[in-house]
Amino acid sequence: MLFYLYQLLKNWDIPGMGMFQYISFRSGAAIIISLLITVGFGKKLIHFLQFKQIGEDVRDLGLEGQMAKKGTPTMGGLIILASIIIPTLLFARLDNIYILLMLITTIWLGLIGFLDDYIKVFKKDKAGLAGKFKILGQVTLGIIVAATLYFSNEVVVRERVIDKDGMYVKEIVLDSITGTHRLQHVTNEVKSTKTTLPFIKNHEFDYSLLVRFMGKSAKTWKWLVYAIAIILIITAVSNAANLTDGIDGLATGTSAISGATLGILAYVSGNVIYAEYLNIMYIPNLGELTVFISAFIGATVGFLWYNSYPAEVFMGDTGSLALGGILAVFAIIIRKEILIPILCGIFVIENLSVVMQVSYFKYTRRKYGEGRRIFLMSPIHHHFQKQGIPEAKIVTRFWIVGIVLAVLTIVTLKMR
Image (cartoon, rainbow, N blue to C red; front, side, top):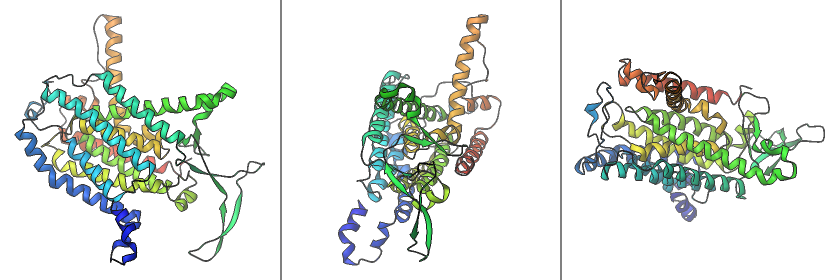
């Protein structure tokens, strides 16, 4: 919004208005405004939720300090959503297809999470929104994202031209900054279903390879395979974030770390100079996403002001489903979704611990007549709680692991 105001007033020579043309400035402004919204209005939201008696109904699982959280305001995810959406509307270019997709993702999954929380809190139904409706909402979003990225003419990547001998074609260009000549790869902007594959030389994987054996029918089926992959990623990551939101500050802090990492990846992928230097896929118009992810980082870090141990407010499904979905769709847009098992490793571990626990319990009950468990309790953060480790220490250790995984994710740009 303010970017378009700058466009209207740029001929008026208003001091400072020129800053709005720079992504770096708008990203910095987005993170500051997001922090101010979260911290400034968070307390008011907490008081409102307390006044309306919108509190967490805690089920006794025998965890230390668990029952003390009963009545803590929930649905705090509303402030996270507002702190993402408002700065994005203010500072991002709203004609950018990627920004529009991220806004749709935020609002869509926020609404699904809000319905779930509303049913739990106001209808007193602990089950919340039926699982099939959650899945339906996530699948629908996946189809919207896949269709947009696959069919929109605005979504292209810049690929290097290869000659008949399989070599990259280069040309001599004049560097406008240094005034010297340099070699540069010849590129074309094309539609592509390629994504980044870590640890290998060419660093890319094309979804079309999965259906190449179908011959002439491959072109038809390629879209379906691409859509299924995106649906699975969005569903898995958003649900995994939901499972991770079990102790104070865990999902929020982990999301902030992953968001910051994705911001770096988006910036270098949307900058032709850095993409050329790192020998990675350059995606035109991607840099604008830095504004969105800055607002995301500000919202999650700001929410920790009230959500860190001992939490004054919980985000509820309103926040957790949205956070996971945002990370998933953002990674898909910047063609880094295959890095999610590394980048969002905490989410993956939490999800796997539940799958392993349930599967092993069912297997042993069927085989031995009684169910046995791998962990004292799942998700795995509750396993450590059962071992008597303080909640704040568990969260801090998980954050440390998340930072290590974030560094490893960035290192994959050159580790191949």
